[in-house]
Amino acid sequence: MGEAIYLITGVMASGKSTVAELLASKLVKGVHLRGDVFRRMIVTGREEMSAEPSAEAVRQLYLRYRLAVNAAKTYYENGFSVVLQDNYYGAELSYMMEQLKEYPVQLVVLCPNVDAINEREQLRGKVGYTGFTVEHLYSEFIRQTPKIGFWLDSSEQSPEQSVEDILLHFGKKEED
Image (cartoon, rainbow, N blue to C red; front, side, top):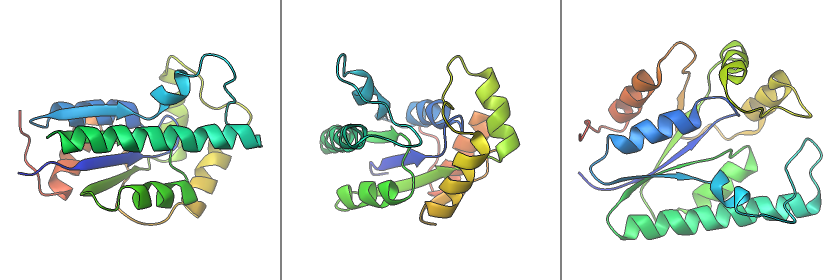
């Protein structure tokens, strides 16, 4: 079974980090690459994304995307399957797919319903929704994001069930 790059996206609190970590653990040589780590590496001068982002925030977002893609490619070229997860909304998802077009990409869009996202947001140890509501971001995500890849409504699923569905969808068996 060959290696792949699993690109996982969804709105904040959709379960990306949890599902990505678990999925990577099911692969023979799996890497969980959190795109957000590159944002957090900026110690001073970081511009946060918001409902009305500055030009610098957008520039830093695409810097983060480029760094994540380069890291994913490097791991893949060294024999690893990579589970790359971040927030890729609308045109940003198309941008990421274009950056990875030479690689075997398995795209997963986690799309639990708004009620599930609100519940998960309340249970998280961090606050992701500042400056906009879950409902607004969710509706914009659904409206703007290209309908490509495997869209998974994980509203009623455990992370383990979501990973099982992902592996089944892509014709993979657990490799642990």
